[in-house]
Image (cartoon, rainbow, N blue to C red; front, side):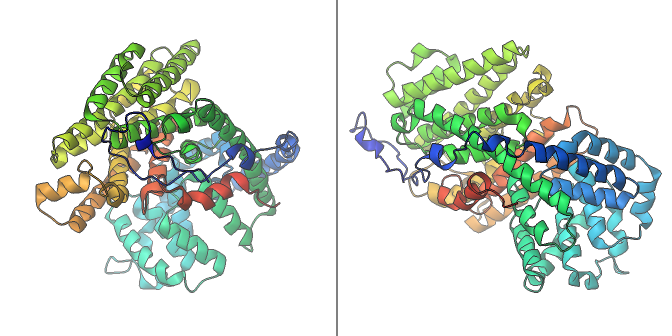
Length: 555
């Protein structure tokens, strides 16, 4: 375990700095922990090819029965292998969605609640806004869900998962969420152990709001315990998971070497050392092999954003932060002269990284895109600087002021922009310009991200003098207690999820993969900050890191 170095002993020890007592890094030697042998990377190739062909044949055959086809797509998605058949799935769902058969089945379909929930989830997951009428048949004469449904564990789980896709005005899904949640809490104590675990996991993090790769790892374990599981599908999922895991380990090594070669843990000892956790964040943006470069870029961006955050929040003095912000805005290496060595070094590292990204994007004929990547990082610094000024002046912003600063000048803008960088030609200049216009889907994501972070980090941040959070601003402006402020902010988060869900529905102005980056990074926030600040407290993520990057799945 890495020893914590007290930054108060570094540089000008007589300067009073707002240092934070962050938990230490728990991964002593990632290059050893996540290493792979040369032979491992070729172990799965031939088996994957054969299994993929078998699964594709099953997919084609399933088209004869719409319900079975939709269930297979659901299984492929949950097992983490739908990306192999992305185009086929897209074409099939669009064909079915536009058919009269689907509309007829939605109104009069003779299927159970579990099937109805799966059908609803799959279409919405891929951006097709199937009607909530699919659930009307499960209501009684009073317009409420039939109480007898509460005895069906699989049906309740499916209804619960479907309700996560609600948009504004869909009251039936609000009712479905309430109805299913209370009953699942009881059913989890009565059903088969593997189903009980799945229910408990879903209540903690629904599939829709979970990190895809974590959901896949858990679902493979569940699916194997299902008596009716498809052996070929299960083996394909296991082999693919292990194969892609090898690539992920290589990427971790790349990011870690970059970090250690720059000696960022030594040069900035006051900041959180979170290489592995930053990579997990990037994995949440996209896990598929074709996004390897993107994951590395996002991981490094998250590391730099963490160092930036801690510099503003837990190190820099007011005067230093004024100069540091100005130096970033000017994008001038000489403008950092006179700053403490750690801040000057960080400034140089940031400029080097983003200049290299811009150079690479220019070579890809994505001219102008690098400018937007830089702009997103500068705006983040300006947002942190504004909060530092508020702290200096003992100013508690109005809730509107805080919300606007948190939306338009926050780290999640830089994180999402970096995820666009890694999508290649899918994200040209017009995509970056669209993102910088703050479309509804992006604003909804930023609201969720900023407010969930504020709620989970509230207690830790208030152990020392800290700028007012959304909770503090709400309490002061509306004269309410902390509990009430959190409740109201959670309502805003829930409403923002509905807005986000709506904006994911077709037709889209820009390619669906770009919208998925926004959704996926919002999912990371939901997992990292829903209950506690997992990113700052890496011990809480240890089991997930081990299951994703260290342990293979037995085949």
